[in-house]
Image (cartoon, rainbow, N blue to C red; front, top):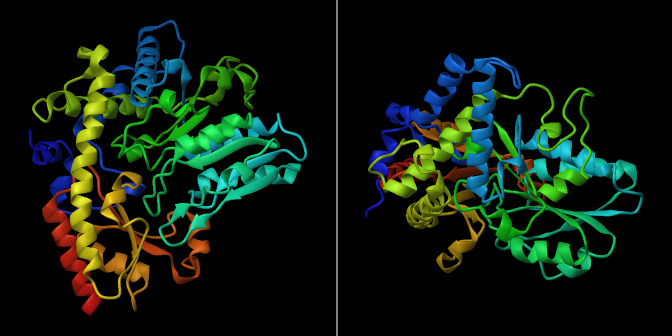
Length: 418
C-alpha cells in the first residue's frame, strides 16, 4: 500500500497552519492522540504516585503502561528497565554523576567528537575527578567516525564508552555494533545516545547489547520528556543521587522528585500512534495499541520500516535539489548507496549568507529550519563552522511531503540568487 502521508498529516493539528516543518531534528509536531492523552491525564488521573485513592491509582497505572509502551518501542525486556526524566540531557548528567562514584583516578571514558554535547559534557565533568577522556575523531570528508583506531582508543583502562547512534547535525548513523563489541571486549559499560536515531530507525536494545540508551520522545511525536533505558543488571549496579525517602529500587530511584505524569501519558500515546501506523497502514490511525498489546512490537517495526522508506525517498529528492544550487556546501554522507548509514537530515551552508539569515528568510516564507550548532558543538568547532555561525539544518520526518521539499528548494534557490 502507498504510504498514507495525507492521512497521517490530518492527525497533526499544527500542520493545518500551512507551514513547512523541517525542524523535526529539534522536535517534531504531535498528533491529536498525544494532545488528548495529556489532557485526559489532567481530567482523570491528576495525582501523585502511590496513594490509596482512585486518581492516584489511575496515575500509577498510566505510568506503568507508559513504561511498557516505551519498552516495546526499544525492545527492552520490561518496563522496569525504563526511567523517565525531564529530558535526555538531565538523565545523562544524572547517570554520569552516579557512574562517576564507581571510577578511580586514571580510569578512562571514550566519547565521540561527532556527538551532541548532551553526550559529551556530562562525561567531561568527570575529568575533574582524574578520569581520562579519550576521543573518537571525525572524518571531515563525510562526517563519519574514524573507527580504524577503535581497538587502540578502547583499552583495558576504559570503563565507559558513550557514543551517539546518529549525529543530530549531519545525520550520520554510527556503527554501534562495532563500538559496543569493542567496549564489551574491554569490559567497559556502554551508553548510546539515540535521540536523533529514534524517529528514523527501529531501536532494539537487546540486539545492540548496550548497557544504557537515552532518547527524547519529543523527537518522535511525543511530549517534552526524556527516557533512559538501563539493562536491569546495569541499573542495579548504579547508586544514583536521590532524596532519602525515595525508593532504593530501579527505575524509581533514578526519577528524582515528582515526575512529569502528563508528559509520560503522552509518551505512551505517541508510541501507540506509531504502532497504529504499522498495524493499519494508515487506515485506522489513533486506535489504542492496548487493543493489541501482543502485536505492538511487531507493528512498531513495521511502522519504522515504512517511515524509513518514505523519509529516504524524500531525502533523495531534497539532496538532488540541494546539490543543484551553485556554491552550496553539504556536510555528511551524500552517496545514495550509503543512505542506510544516514538519517534524512541535511546540514549545509550557502556562500555569502550567514546561516541565521538563511533560516530567517526561510522562516519568513513559512519554512521552519534550524541554524547554528544544534548543541553539536564539537563537530561544528572541528569543521571550522562554529565561528561562522554554524550551518543550516533541514530534517525530514514521517509527515513531510514532496510538495514541501519542492517549496523549500524553491525558496532556497531564491535566497541563493538574492
